[in-house]
Length: 172
Picture 1: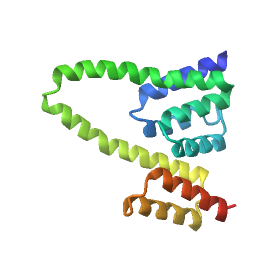
Picture 2: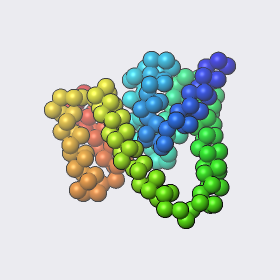
Picture 3: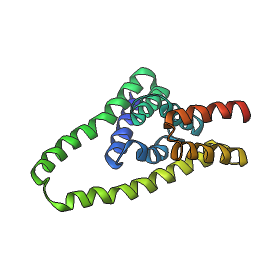
Picture 4: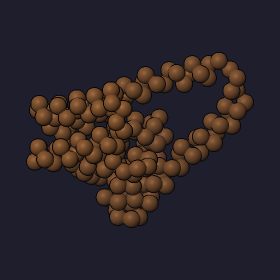
């Protein structure tokens, strides 16, 4: 019961303090690695949640919850992940409905984009540094993946699956 309560509070806190699913990965890393799961389990959870269809953040929450306390843990982590954004979005929607025509709203949203982008790059770097090969092979897979997504418009999930298969073939 204590583990379920800890899971609930961690995911409530992460979802109250972060702005999006990908941005919450860094905060979640600091909250659960070494406390509830190992670093290897976290990297595996991030990789698996990125490949599967659907919300990465919810899948990551369920994976971590399941790793900590089985099905009840997965359910508690899922509920704790859904609850804060649902309540917040209802409140924000009510407020935005009243002030939607004011110019500062669009400026605020435009200001969020660069900050979230930097946060996502920082988190990606931490995952790459801790979980992957940082030799030339890892850099090659990363650069080829980036090129495939940017220049060839290959969907991210396909790039991740192919990169994982290349890792199995050449980095094992």
